[in-house]
Image 1 (cartoon, rainbow, N blue to C red):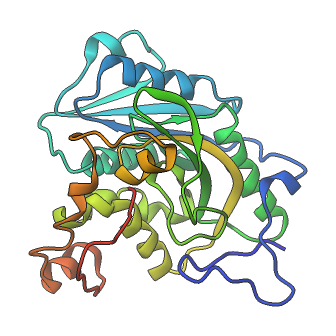
Image 2 (spheres, rainbow, N blue to C red):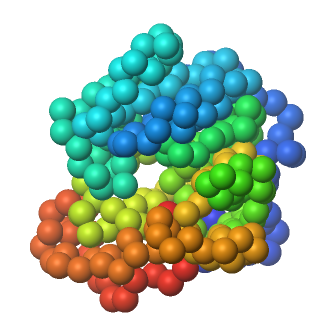
Length: 287
């Protein structure tokens, strides 16, 4: 049976198990999948790397949405006629939340069945979308309609693209799921655009917020069990893990210092209809 695991308490009860994609015998036919990538001021080479990884998907029914957060790279995107390029008139600089949500809402309105999120500085392996669709099919065969599918990731460092590191405590059933490892089905359509509604002080941990929302709404989730996301990490602990000197500048650790600051219960309720409290930043987070 497919186990739909609580995001913060992924323990299995007697007789239940996590079913991973390697146990599946088939792939759902006909599901239309959108991959949504927000971008801000990334280099053309970084965007090209991301675009190439999506084009290389083995699953045939994939459309890539690139959403410019105020700084469109038209010269590059005109070379990719199959990509749906959305241009926001001004930048938001909120960790991709606004353009990500806008792109997902467009994909929902365009009738896609599944949305996969992929940040511009990350890549996906050729089988990424196929494993997501296959996990949905496997759950359907077991009588479960999934709302979300989680993939796993490898980490690499800027300039060290050959690295394949596994973050501590990140495995099937873990409480943290990176943005680029999240896929949502149409039954969770009300969350596709929720990235736009995340309060500014929570956008540094937007992936955690989305996972908390999934738990709040008791969504049915499953893991592919496959590391099909390649995540470019600028977190100090990844440099330490790789045995590479931590650079004096350019790491992301400082972004966690003000998480939740100035956020009132009223604003949180107005935006997300939840009542959460936030104290000190989450140690060792990597979003």
